[in-house]
Image 1: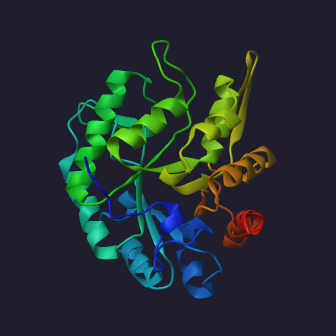
Image 2 (image 1 turned 60 degrees about the horizontal axis):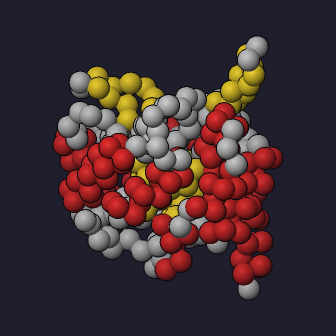
Length: 293
């Protein structure tokens, strides 16, 4: 089992990501962020977008890394897949970590590949002891290769497996405990899944160990309407919904101030819209700190 040098959110060093709001850095905003240096706490990028040997993405990341703390967020490692762990992918990630020295590195509790073929989605796992053991071994292997702890993010889902024996939150907590990894808690995904699968999101939050949560994600969702009812889709293409802001407030009351990211990946708005969402999160984080005092 890996013992990480990355400490929990209540004991961060002075040079690490602050308990403030950051934004996901996307290509349409490269130049604007570099020129205006908005008042945000940190930046997060999708790791795989920077696996190349050169080009504009790496140029801008080099420029911005000197001004903002950085988090690397992976979407393609497919930790839950039955395929062998992609060693080439992990080596690319390790090289990126060595180059940019991010404060946090994260991946998803999901799978997205089979027999070497990759799907453009983060697919859910059955919540069983077998899947738990498999995922724990994969995370331990990844952490060993990287030489550091990673965070695992809960994902949105639109179906459930009949043979699951654990709840989603029980499964997530056991993964973190057994693999000794951190958690990236996506509050929007909790809300989306609670609506789609009809569970109480507050029960989910109450089960999460505060000392494992090192990052929070917030994003917008879409609503697909069918004769049988509504399905919420985690599309990262809208402002954070009021109900998700309310759940985020409850998460802060439960966990304390945690670095919080605003994700926006489709229908990307002007940078000012994204930073205003970050400022909303900052105001809630400040209220959380004020209550703690």
